[in-house]
Amino acid sequence: MTAYNDNLKSNSDNQGSNDKTSGNQISDSQTLNNQALNNQTLNNQTMKVTVNNAPADNPATLWLIDDDAALRLVLADTFEDAGLTVISFTQAQAAWTRLNDILQQRESATQLPDVILTDIRMPMMDGLSFSDWVHKHFPALPIVIMTAHSDLTSAINSYQTGAFEYLPKPFDLDDAVATIYKAINFQPDMAKADQPNESDVKTTANKSPETDTKSTSKNKATHNNKTATKAHKTTKNKAEIKTDTQSNDNPSGIIGQSQAMQTVFRAIGRLAHSPITVLITGESGTGKELVASALHQHSPRHQQSFIALNMAAIPHDLIESELFGHEKGAFTGATTTRQGRFEQADGGTLFLDEIGDMPFSTQTRLLRVLANGEFFRVGGQQPVKVDVRIIAATHQNLEELVKLGRFREDLFYRLNVIRLPLPPLRTRREDIPALTSYFMQRAAKQMNTALKQLQPAALQIMQAFDWRGNVRQLENVCLWLTVMATGDTVMVDDLPPELLEAMPANTELQPQQTSSSSEFDQYNQQHNGDSSHNPNIDSNNLNIQTQNIAKNPSWQQALAEWAKQALQTGETDILQTATPEFERVLLTAALNHSGGKKIAAANLLGWGRNTLTRKLQQLDMSAAETQTKE
Image 1 (cartoon, one colour):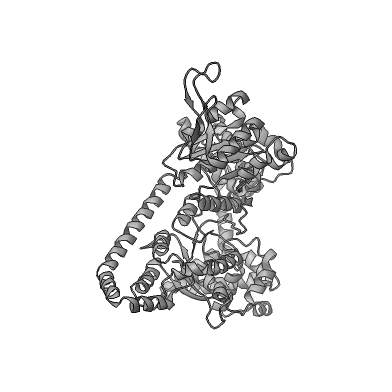
Image 2: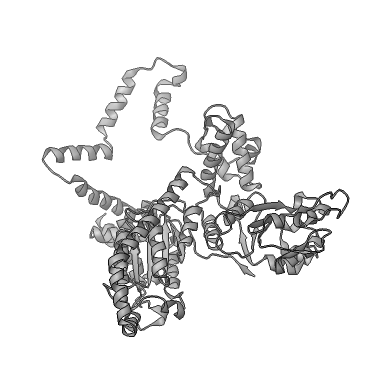
């Protein structure tokens, strides 16, 4: 048994916010304290990482490709601290040009990197097109793809282009370093022999000079055009993929930015092109059939049938006929020969849902099909041969059923080749807002009504609910709200009774008014009573309040006054002047408040530790200086 367990963590609560990079976690500073010691160890490393423990004077080279300058700087510092030689590119087109020069032997093959880390969405050439081209021409060169648009389509497309690994942003920098280490040393020596290098070029030239000269001249004349055309076509295809994805927000229906769902996405990407049997486990309503369908739709069998069959929904005496078919006259009522689900799914995928409810006698026949792809129809004498990929699913504990004698042990091991567990909704509450939005849109379209928005307090209650029915229950609640809630906004009182009854009595809901409006109402109530009962409000009181605000201007007003005066005196580039001072003030305040502790100060500012350290260096500051200043 090989249980699928991806140890690469991925916390994607803040999609696309590349500016909030951190020393241990990009765009997520909540786990910095837990990994402070790990970071200190990583930053103190002085050894150089080499390929297959080669001498330290030849460190491994990483090509880093990302159009985000701030993120590129943080990643480069991280990998250099980890002992790698880092060469940065602002776009994939520049890296492609250098690789093409190596391919055309205009540069030495020794200039090849040991691993490439690239973003997906970049101008001119996207990361998927670049990865696809590299995989075709340098198959032994590992590529790790990172993206802030961490959905199922991106994960599958990444693996389809031959990527070694897929890192959804925000990701943990320690895990990114570990992934790069694995990528550097993953290829065996035989695979490396296929990679172009200088010695191979010389050997080929010595063996057949004429052939090499002809091929070289031919390559110089035509390969550039072919390569450019191929890259252009690939870019166009990938662009079409992204356009389709944007037009259809989620064709698979699988939504999630949480760490648990990123693990599922990576698993689907890796398993989609494999014919191997998969066992999907998880509670009812977690989306097991959606995952099975996604595995089929992104596999080489996608043009063939996907047959889904629920074992719990079929009477036990009809399951064998349903699965394997029957011959005419095999039993009472069998007036014609009928194909079973296995024959209907020949060449495609058969999804056996709730496999734990399959009768014990049928399990024996299923075991034979899994062993050699043959079965007999009910009442048949000739074996039927099929080529079917089996994907099974269950919400039950099959190991316990084996101990109880209700499930065959040998069948369990046949099915349990790759196990893919799906997380319950209550363990990924950060995905509830996106799922709710998706289901509300779908319900509005289904019911042909206007889209309804959830009040923040109502969404807060939904996120706190346990959802024992998981995603299916959430979908039903969204449909209920679309039909039953009045108005365009779903208020707390509009929620179903089961959600309100489960809400703890001490739950603190988010305020529904802005601070300015709350202060305004409070002022009116203090000085004029309740405005709803006093329509004749004295405007003099509002004028007095305005005058008080003018006497005590806010920092925004002070900044506006400074900008006005600076422009009047003929100054230019005032943003470049103000930004460092603005950051300096905030850094000083945060460091003094935290007692000089960088991790705590980074949390207060919403930054990561690496970002804070980099800002201190840019502003020529130190934590000690900021404390002594106050």
